[in-house]
Length: 136
Length: 480
Image 1 (cartoon, rainbow over the protein chains, first blue to last red):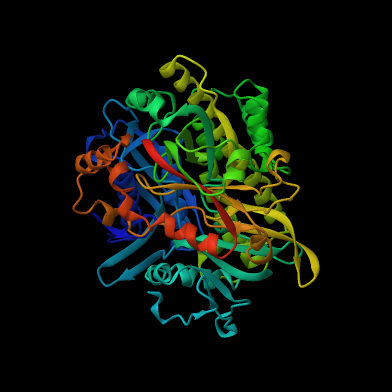
Image 2 (image 1 turned 135 degrees about the horizontal axis):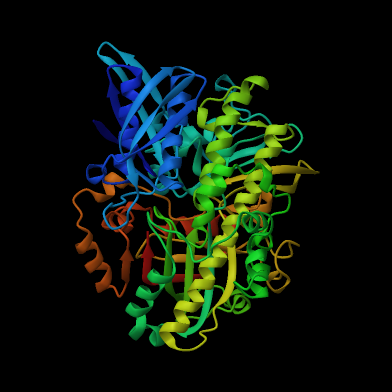
């Protein structure tokens, strides 16, 4: 679940999770949904994913950059994500999906990068919220 | 929003935000804009971002905002800043994710009248020959070793390997290859991500337009550039693809960590920077130059494919010549006279174009008498411009001017209430054929999403930073 945030040149999203792990899963799914139609992707193969950071914010940028690398360079189509371990300095998990197939998958937007612009990761009474802007 | 920022007008085209040391500004911000454009500029965060740039350690002269400025990340898009080469910093955000995003103008021997009957075939052929959008690997299949050569030699490598003629490299900014590129500083990830994309257009605001010369404003310069009214030309707008995006991503992560070591604090994490002379700064510059060279090679590969498209459709050599190629996302070491002394500075141009005046030694000899060509793409369906640099840019803006029309609406706002087929139909009524990989590609780039490019050009022309040469109008648009 995520909401699109507007930016003059680009695009952002706000997403939620009960725990940091769920937040990072939701953020990866939001990124994937902006890049392609996620609903038609089958979960046939797994990709281990990990990232390091100095705090939850830089960790989120690096985690999403890791996901983006697999989409853009390794031509992966992701359906969903599971985070298995997370601290403010390190996150590890798995992306589930299949190799990108132009005949079945529909790309939407080419995302160049994940930015630090107005980046927010905050803990609320109900859990965690993140706001992230993407360069497209 | 930026409405509370105090701005004083110096004249009709120049406006100043005075230095405020309380918020860490080390210098003024100078904005080039008409009053109408200034009102639009105040609506987003671009001026706050230009102020943040004014806080960077080692900034020389003012933080500059061009008339097409709009909100970016860290740096505003349409921002220029010169940083002292000895004591200043380098910021990957001041170059952007799309390193050496730029524009290439190709002239042809066809008139608009000759091309029009085959226009739809031509657009379809180019769409087949130049991969764009979300898919996209190019016709070139380079080995790891060849990719390193591309990163070192840029457009020159393409020409040497049969993808162009000698003139093609000569008439690109920096001869289509920056010296000091270091492929070993480009990560394996960046190479794997970008390598297969050599020869592709990408998506977003990148495009390839078949245009005609609508009006000549400076006949002498147009003659030197080989441009005449009604002539068909092609404008290619793209950059270093995934390779450049990954280089910026990699170094932003490194620099965010390294800033603690150098005790640098910035107002926005996207402005992460390190001293130019530090190992991290030098590594970034080596990788950035390599990515810039990749972008020049990329535009050269696209031009090579384009020659094939024209040959196939018209059955003859249509004499496609490179007019010029400029980059508008780059950091370059240049020398300027500042307070009577020559100083070496690293000019960050984030959505800004170099505009050297007549006589500058970095301009190809054939063009030296008229000044460096400046290529300004407009929005889809409006106009693009050819200008030449003037002395004013050397005195005031570190040899820089604007880079485009500048966005006005977010992508979401541009799509709201619009239908791609209607937009396409309206453009076709004006004689413009549009082909895009996606409907969103058309909607997000509707002309209404941008400022009026003619007004942006008027500002730099009237302010004496560059001079109008020719206005170009689109006939065919290929978009990602």
